[in-house]
Structure formats: structure tokens, C-alpha cells
Length: 77
Image (cartoon, rainbow, N blue to C red):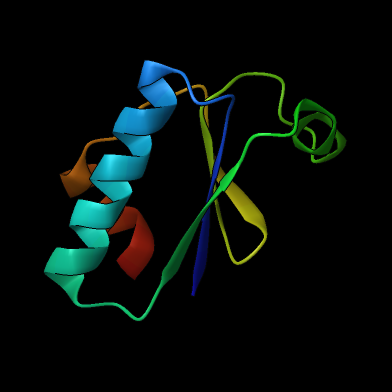
């Protein structure tokens, strides 16, 4: 599984990345967490608000800092 955090590295983006790491750890998933900070790439993917989260290339969240608990539900559905 590849989880991408799309954003410029702002505090909200960092919080989303930490929450994603926590959810992956609790669920014991084999996942790679990658930060995408290139504004052009983020815009190409149709994301106009950050932070955003993509799982295996599919945008799942935009403009929201999900909690670890919310991410656990998202990653297992």
C-alpha cells in the first residue's frame, strides 16, 4: 500500500502524516508513506486544498486533517 500526503509541509500536513503513521502502525499494515510537496504535481492530481491524502494513487481526503482513528477506518474500507 502506498499512502501519499499531498501538501507543502505546513503544520496541518505534518499532523496528517503523523496520524497516517499512527494508523498504519496500529493496523500493522505494510505501507509506504510518502510526502508529495510539489505544487504542480498536487494541482495536476486535481487537489486544490491541502492537506490531502491518497491511497494507491486514489485521492481519499482533501482539505482535512483526519485523526488516526478516522484514517484507520479509511485504510480498512
